[in-house]
Image 1 (cartoon, helix red, strand yellow):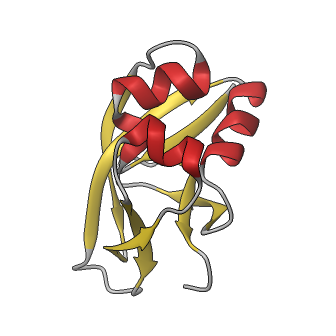
Image 2 (image 1 turned 45 degrees about the vertical axis):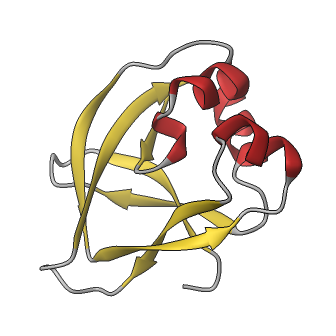
Length: 112
């Protein structure tokens, strides 16, 4: 099983149903050294699923005082591939360590 941190639209029920075919369960957690920015979504399917033209995007600052809260979900490898498709080319997936001590995948703004 894989761990995936969501701080944005992957927490929405409709996005989870469209992306994973089920509702996810997770636990709250915090990522240090990042702030939230946003990206404009141009992919029609992603826009339709989320209902939002702009999506949050993590930007690394490296400052321990900058934090972003969200949810760590446990998903399958196949579901992680589905998440990769949903997050389109504006994001890249990296692994980070969270306040709880858990390591999880997270999508950050490309080039940040």
